[in-house]
Length: 450
Image (cartoon, rainbow, N blue to C red):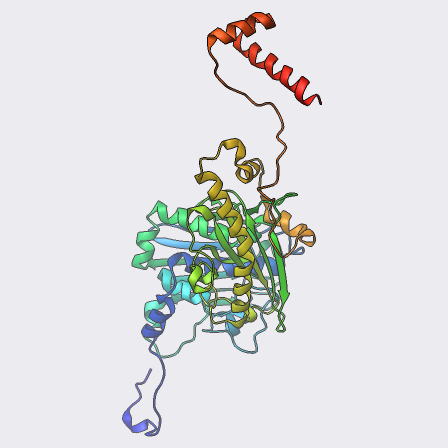
């Protein structure tokens, strides 16, 4: 490319083009390697939902991730990328205004795939077999950064007369010449365990609907997101529809006392964006700062679930990295305040549970703790199915109410043997247990009589 000289420059023109090095460094600065891989998975999940005959059954679709310290690869059978979509939209930096997003999609901003490429490595090969086209392209990032134009090119593309059945579609993204972060992370089992956990949580719904995701051959399972929901402990449920079409449902209550699971879980179009979150972002500010108390051990039972849904993903109140909520969003501010109000009764219960445990209270009188220890939580899906029976305020039993115990109790007391022996002789028994049983029965029969 011929370098522009001062002679043919417009003297009134001030250049504002970003350098590619600067653009890339800023693009990947605030995203982790796990999040970058998550962006690629998001695209595959959108493809599976778009091509599924039943949106609640993704069992025909799979995503395979393979990585080591020399290469990374993600392959899926979720419909491929049509060449016209790749040419006009998929590889542009940002989503063009004329591009119509899939309804209820999670790939919104138009930067995730390219950002992932730059984060993971320098040498990228994309192969796609879609319903109406096939293509292959190679991106040498180090070479691409040196040229002025921002476009990419197909190595091969086939569109004329192509008609591939859905079960033959496939997208393969292979990356080599890995970044230093990728080399270190892909050689570390701790990273893989964290990646499995994160993607398992993020795509809880897709996995529950049958989508098969594997990482280095290990199949992911959806986590157990639960709430206690029985006749006495009822979760709170609140919902709202905004004028822009954004819908939100909030559920809050208690579950098992597990510190690593307590907090708020926030989903946008069935994709987990944050959680379990116990920060000020979800109301755990401390009592003097407009929220509830800061999170600590006594609140390990708390579970809150927020589900934002919108046909137009641009209305979702999340960050571009999809790793947190947009705290400046008016919709999220409104919902967050409601979350704080809903938490109030749940916090009151957990404070009572703590008092029962801390006092020198006999186990038999730890009424609320004893009740909860006997109840198994249910999956959040079960709670959602029965949401019409729930109220806006979390409810739990009055701990001061008299509890009728069932089963048998043990009564112990001591008395001088001189007196015990006389009672034994009178009752014609030989064992101490029999003395206790007979004297109790005698008292009950003569003083209570019922």
